[in-house]
Length: 435
Image (cartoon, rainbow, N blue to C red; front, side, top):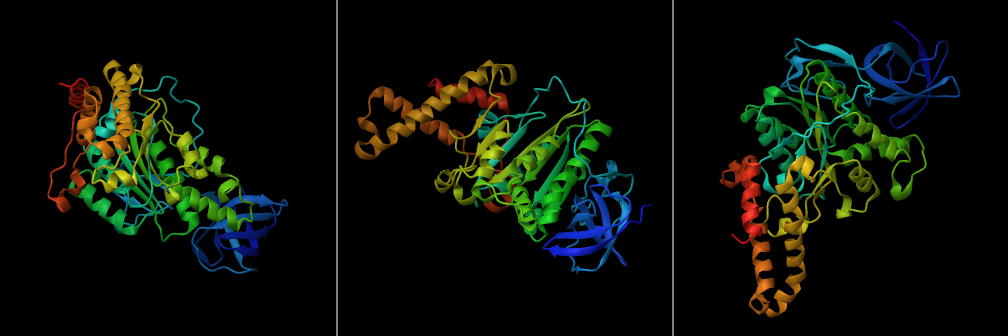
């Protein structure tokens, strides 16, 4: 083992700089405080050939002059069948119980360098049972789907419902990555998955709201490392839920400030695009299996033009927009049917019927919006017969896309719905054509 030592020369928040002598440690290598091995530091860069720039992962006090010692290794994570059903922190340590892990291998945290990616992506559609999503933003194996919305519009509830509906089919390994979210939500999610008997096929990684920026920034990379191992070694598809990506970028911005980096447009870190691209690249598919990711994105102040939100949108295949105005009408899920969109709505993927229905539905909804101002003044009865038909069909469509959720059944007393995709297409076809 390489026992390189380094003396701390400066501390700025979680960023610790230390002067070393001898062989140069590699980026990603783990150091610990001398005589206090649980205190971990990760090398993130080297300055002036003899200064290590490290990240204080343990958030414990350290001062100038302290010695940190190299382990000679990078961070190691448990992977394999033994991690199913368990909850981990950013280090890969179990936080659900003290029960030891069995049947696991330990692998280093690393980025995806797989050169054997699929050349012909799978176009299998994954049914979610949620009408507005399966119609406007279908889940396709190996692709990236975003759930975008401000605070309190139902992102976490919708994510939980999707996990309940899709994971219960038992065809993939499910992963949940909580980045910067509340401890209570993670606890409730674990109980929901256990009650639905799908926790045993799920892996949870949490970098929670009370954790440091270092751990919140790291947890996505740790989870992605395990997901790729399960993809390539267990030869299974992985369905990964990330809640939420904005908190990952926010944590990166906090670390950037500690590094004294100049902010870019909008007040974010200058490495915003690089951080996001690396994060998304780690969720790729290979010839052995697919990683399908569902990512929630918090919209600060409901501003869809926020630079971080815009950058995330560019990385996604489908975008589900949750609207505060829709939610205030008592419609759940609060999906904005016109703002929600997908690049996958082509006949080669979703079929001719589905691809042709989407623009027809959008046209009816657009017409409905243009007529609302007139109806508010003179009433629906004063519209032309053609416009009355448009208005009525739009109302039928809006009502059709309302749906009760299984994960809310205990609170509302209303049983959740799961609607088959083909049934949904046939029913929408009937509404559009006035049957």
